[in-house]
Image (tube, rainbow over all chains, first blue to last red; front, side, top):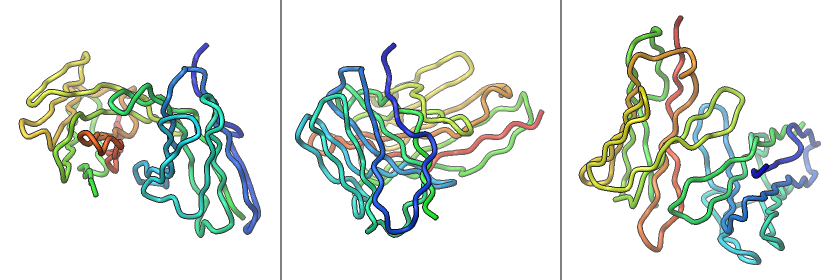
Amino acid sequence: DGGITQSPKYLFRKEGQNVTLSCEQNLNHDAMYWYRQDPGQGLRLIYYSQIVNDFQKGDIAEGYSVSREKKESFPLTVTSAQKNPTAFYLCASTRGPYNEQFFGPGTRLTVL
Amino acid sequence: GQQVMQIPQYQHVQEGEDFTTYCNSSTTLSNIQWYKQRPGGHPVFLIQLVKSGEVKKQKRLTFQFGEAKKNSSLHITATQTTDVGTYFCAGCGNFGNEKLTFGTGTRLTIIP
């Protein structure tokens, strides 16, 4: 069954701690994306990767880091430098920039 | 940078009434995509429009892409409770700027 998985679904962390969100896809897609969604707002792009070992900053990259060592995986680290990390994080993948994006179920991060 | 505005932000309709959401881009788009996000869920791709003036239908949903490829609309005829959710447009720039920029979304609630 092809798709995108994100884990965990809910995550709680103390302020000042780094946390890594997992995103895995078995759709054989080249491009992967991380979005942040806040209540009542749209999706804002954090980072994206169009190919393995390469990634670019999106519109709100400050306080986040990513890696793309494997085609299937695109983990996102929320660092302590991110001033307001509590949000819903969505990972997506696509065959190419002009194709539909497939989203994972999301991770809801709460920083206490 | 590219901005995509969407109106209205919220829409409450009686079941059976029609619903329309509008999307406007600050720049010309290569294509526009529409997604639906159910409450508590993740965005799911609905459709992509590519050609100037294009109109596509999916049962009760009608999607339009403006002649100048800077605006789009989604119209739902005779809404049903299953239409509840947030509808996002997402615009893709032209060559060299292929990031997908999401609109802020229109949250549709249905009054039974």
